[in-house]
Length: 129
Image 1 (cartoon, rainbow, N blue to C red):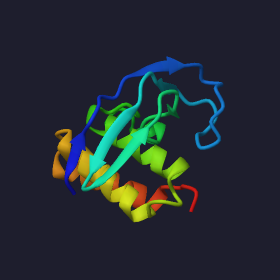
Image 2 (cartoon, helix red, strand yellow):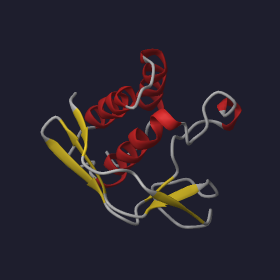
Image 3 (cartoon, rainbow, N blue to C red):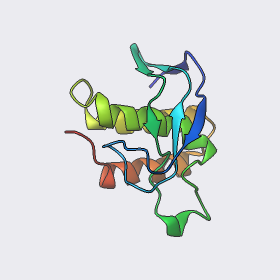
Image 4 (tube, helix red, strand yellow):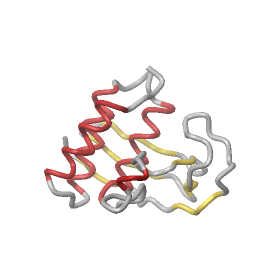
């Protein structure tokens, strides 16, 4: 996949009790302070300002290895969450998961780590499908 970032990801923390039906309650969350736009091949995906995300859904026991805000997965997680929560009628789950891996690689992740994250979303990811 060819990835181009058409804008940067800027976020601000929000209270843990902010409701977002696509996220677990009680998790640390951030909201976008401006639109985040990525082109994946010829598809442009725009995550709107105000969208709330909780980073990567990583079990707490693994946080010493990878926090939910793991740098190389930050932008990938935002796009992945948005496709899962809002664009599931437009894009397939497989597309979302492959885009997640491609964005991680673009952001400097090793192939091994990107593959681990990819396999995790393939096995445990839940969206609107």
